[in-house]
View 1 (cartoon, helix red, strand yellow):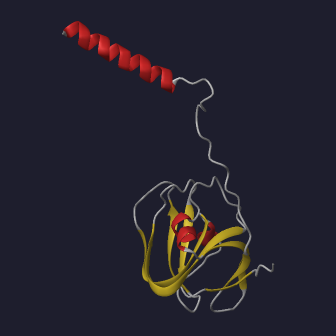
View 2 (cartoon, rainbow, N blue to C red):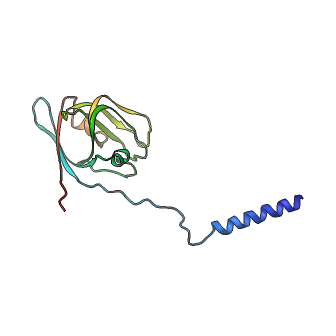
View 3 (cartoon, rainbow, N blue to C red):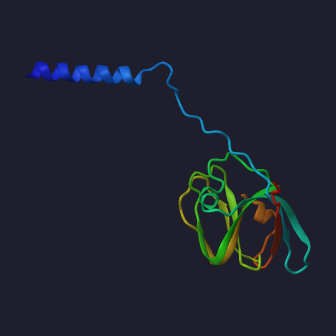
Length: 167
């Protein structure tokens, strides 16, 4: 009985090896690079002086899929680029860095497009919650360190416009 069991096990292993060792099978699946798609422009303003802090090219996240995916799986983003999440309602927000491969600053803005809070230097691939701690309708993701470089403060403002696609 022991010999039959070994023979049966050997036969199963050999069969599995035949099916899994096809020489045309890919060694690994490569994910295509996701590139930035400019869908609008955004300007940040100092609240007190109404002076321009910076202007950015933006990619918009408005659909459920775009919001869930965000900047996941991307390798980098230029300092003049950002992703703007646009929500239909204002409420407290929680983000995380799952599958996001570079550090970010998250800037939370209310329905008046006023900065209400930040999460600075969010670490890549970290799944810890990054809460807004305030009601927010927009979230702007930029490269880590830019909020500090711009001396962005709660109360500063943003305005943006998106490009309309004409068929």
